[in-house]
Length: 166
Image 1 (cartoon, rainbow, N blue to C red):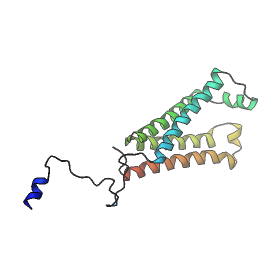
Image 2 (tube, helix red, strand yellow; image 1 turned 30 degrees about the horizontal axis):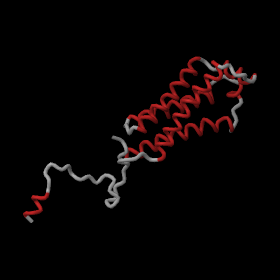
Image 3 (spheres, rainbow, N blue to C red; image 1 turned 120 degrees about the vertical axis):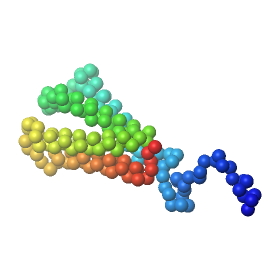
Image 4 (cartoon, rainbow, N blue to C red; image 1 turned 30 degrees about the vertical axis):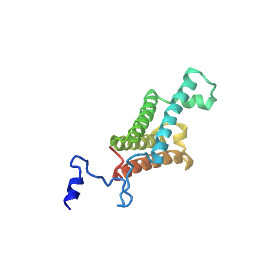
């Protein structure tokens, strides 16, 4: 018994049970879950998609149909700014999730609130011909967008319970 005390190094850090499958503790100590990668790559593609769309329309002046021209004229400067704020917020939230910062929860929550508010505004209060004739299909895209934002937020909160964040 005396030998066992001499074999213990008092300067050795305590053994952690994080990620110990035998103890039933599951965390993401060394690698990122697949969904984190998917969300991060999705955010990169989304921000490049918005930038590319604006570049094609305003810089390269691609030909647009009459309906598209009318639709673009109805978009205000505030809506353009909010588009960039929203997509930047999504990228920032995904980046914080990717680098394991808890601020990702707050950013995804703000994104959900922003998407919900924008969807309600565009679906019900914006005075356009499309909004005046609401159909079931015109409400599908905002509903799916809100649902995805809510699922992202739920997943980010779920990761907090799994000790994903540093």
